[in-house]
Image 1 (cartoon, rainbow, N blue to C red):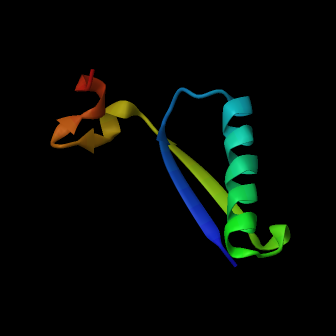
Image 2 (image 1 turned 45 degrees about the vertical axis):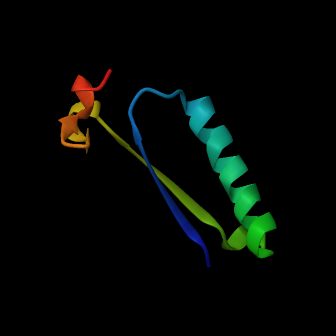
Length: 62
């Protein structure tokens, strides 16, 4: 039972996230030949200031 966890900065529309969930699900089904009903996708959003990359807080990344 594949479980895909996606973590993003906040700011994308609900439609964009729904589209991503559909496409990620389809990619998993195609890649490992599993039934679509076995695939779970969860999207967690974070404020950019609560996420860092290379030691720099996200709200300071340009």
